[in-house]
Image (cartoon, rainbow, N blue to C red; front, side, top):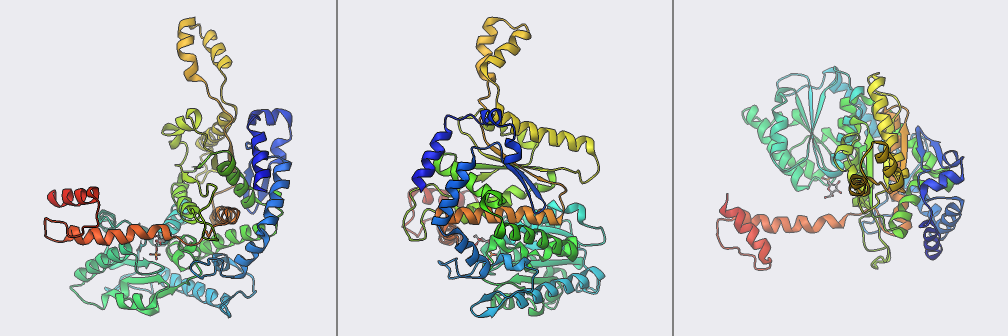
Length: 543
Ligand code: F6P
């Protein structure tokens, strides 16, 4: 099957994307669709009806429907960690049952959601008070990776939905103390609530920052340990560690091992979102994701938005050698969206061993990168247009401005459309020469300059449009990418739900840390290479 797909993609190498539009004036209609609050134009890609026919067969071969069903049904598809993968259950509003190890998890989810709701009411009404009796105005979420990127991206994206009577939110993730220190400058401890967000409650960065924050609070209240339960709450799966840290278990918001870190914003890890934007908005976010879940479960392959994105990426990565993918939101509020997708995609599909334990013989997850437009246009788009490698791009645009300033919004949208058009069409040498002749330039000047002004074009892109950026549409957008990544994982026959690749660095950090912390000028660990030794010595000599 993969051979047939390869041959199919080989036939595309001689097809210029722009010509596909010339051959078929209905191409845009054929290769665009609306689904759960989003619109996708994928016409500027190498794709045709045969592509879908071939992938339909491929999906049958890899039992795609079965694995998708297994995920939604709570089967332990994360087999290396022996866990179910059930972030979709967190946004399931139906009254059905989903069982994990014989236990229906839906009532557990509802109970925790209710607890979030009640707690938001307490904080928002002012009945939850800090140690000195003042109400809470500042939320500081201390977490990293999935315990930071999702909530911080959503809070930033939905800023216009924050009302001034709700608390402000800050996110601290980096072990560099600058992150916490700069945040503390903005807040009044009497009115602050620290959310320690960590699935494991063992992550070094989070626990060290949490300890620092705890010390600051203790110093503020002259060492009175009772102050901790008024200013710290935990979002975690690890009760013992939360208790040991000194957080009142009444203020521990639970989630479960079947929620992956990078899929956890829908769980109690999203508490900062609910506190900042209000519970109604958090529920709309969940509802938007559920819209996409329903679409993903039921739409046929050629009308299924996440599957279409997955197919396109799979084809580029595997058969056309395009191993990098840019996510380019034309929306300042989506400033952190690419960073969030980077973890979602690269931590899920950055794998080189398949489910059978063998090395893969095809490229898997691409490099995900990008920045919001139009800023990126003035930085790296040069390479997108004239560099030696083609980079498939996802442009994400919002039809309506948040602030009713249509004039600048239309400039933003025009730029977005222009970029995908330029990638598609390029500018030929003949056209460049004609333009230069019209400008009255000499033959010499034209010969010297013209090649540098040529754009090859023939570069693929998608455009995803949200009518408005609101909780519901954002929920759908995030779930769109979650299901794209899930689909590609099945296509590559890898486990998208573990992340052993982050472990080695953590282990080595501790070995190096003990060398950095000891007072000897000699390095004790003789297993280090000379570069590692040299770097450790350099730091020690320069501290
Ligand atoms: O180190 C990677 C990772 O395990 C991510 O998968 C996770 O989102 C992040 O660290 C934070 O983990 P935790 O929520 O357990 O602190």
